[in-house]
Amino acid sequence: QVQLVESGGGLVQTGGSLRLSCAASGSILSIFSMGWYRQAPGKQRELVAAIADGGPTDYADSVKGRFTISRDNEQYAVHLEMNSLKPEDTAVYYCYAEGSGSTHWGQGTQVTVSS
Image (cartoon, rainbow, N blue to C red):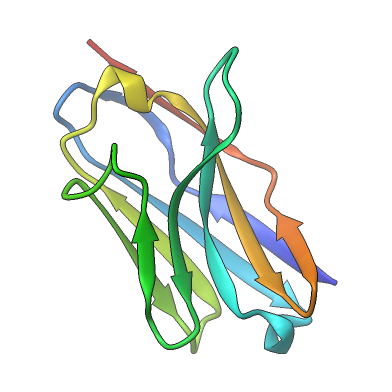
């Protein structure tokens, strides 16, 4: 099993920045990729950013150029730097870790961008 603990998030004005972090523990050697999904009220959960072992990254078109994902393999953590935030970025952000055929999820952290 992999446990994921998220931190960061909160309330910010349009144009502001936030940093999300997610620390993994447990069966961390099984992890291949990590990243973030988000879910806004009344909408489906969507992939925001992902980073695989070795560094390849993937971003949703809506966040390209504004968000940056990074991974700390020594600390088994993943970070999401969010800049130029918009009201449409408001959602619950979930950290995930994939590997060995399993996907593990964090508890979610709320990001609210006020206009």
